[in-house]
Image (cartoon, rainbow, N blue to C red; front, side, top):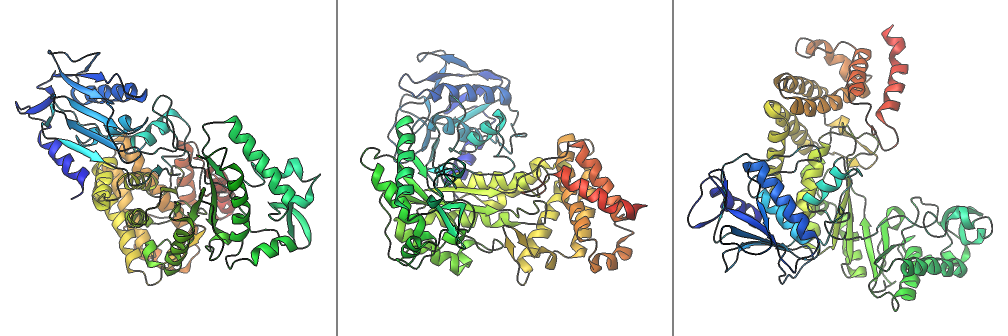
Length: 589
């Protein structure tokens, strides 16, 4: 049993029954403790105290007082007291020698994380920016020997999914509650910024600014200068880049991360100078990016010793260098492709590349993972089963950070569950994935949870039994292993779940999101012979009439939710439905 789970059970044991030997926060509907922000605490401790007060009131109906010094009338909950920590964002919650409940953490964010994770031990859950579980109780207490100590699995933690990607306050609040640190709400501490992105020709040496006057600064592709990449061997271009980076660092003294990732294409320079750089190592376009990054890193190391330069191991730059060395202030964002139907440890190519990058960068690696098909976010894709095994492997390698692109869009198949599981795992790599999935489905699908769990298990078992499943970022072969019979079963299960949740609007909405994914699959695959062949035998239990009828039903649901943004990476549901209405209106006539 992992540490957090153990202490959660300890806390739960005293959740409802106050005890003379326990630290009682609320007993029998009356507050027993008050909240004190330690005088030496960071600014965010005040926010942490506010959050604790809000959630205790939600749970018990009792609003804890704020006090400036210990008071004999109340037990003291001390927030943000300085302590010795060995890792960024480490948290500690315990009853100290003075009999105070101390809630604290490392740095500017630690006290806030400590409060949110402490609340989780009482059963509070932050499922998504839209839903959470807050138990209603009369008493809250912990034993006098209660301890919650945790070091996050990675120093940098973020994600890009349906629950992560909004800019509204509720998204920022949810990310904080889940332990992410790449962006932090105002007053909750300073963000931990590690810039791993494609900046060349977009942010630095912008083509629209320089190309007309200096075409030689840009890539020679098929004998012609193109704006796709810079010419990495052109010293004038590199010097101009160094000047831009130094200007940025001078203007922003808090900046510690400079990304020099090449633009998102494979049109790199092949001039004579760049060919010479490529010949220095057997690592393809990786050599070009290292050549530039090392020069920038050397140019800033003396004046800006805290700043790190990042490169991106991605696409044509996946191969690690064998001969070229990385400067000590160069870090690697590693986004290696693979078959996402399996854990990373089952990909020999991934493992070999990861070994090479670990050697080259001395494990100064930030993983960038993927759990989505960007061409169809609604396809049957239970790749979430690989999240925890993968995260544990990244942690065992000593990677510094973890981020992932997950399914986005309101109707993405189990998109919110993926986001929740990913966030829990990168905070604590030892979480129990099966337990988290079971809790999530039970809490979010109400009386329909049994049917939804069967739908999830149907996909998982189909994937595990498939002979050669393939999942990429831009496609998969799920049609080969998620059979028409499974489609019909999915239709039945989700419609049953909708019927069971008619008196629960929130759960019913979640079930309707899944129905969209099921209908989406039918519309896409209707022309396949196996669908038509099995339709007649399924008609008694699966009331599917025609594809135009399905499109009409889908359009009604989309209109109800104002046509959400993402059907795929490229188009939203409004465009998808426009296309389908036009395509099938003749068939309907």
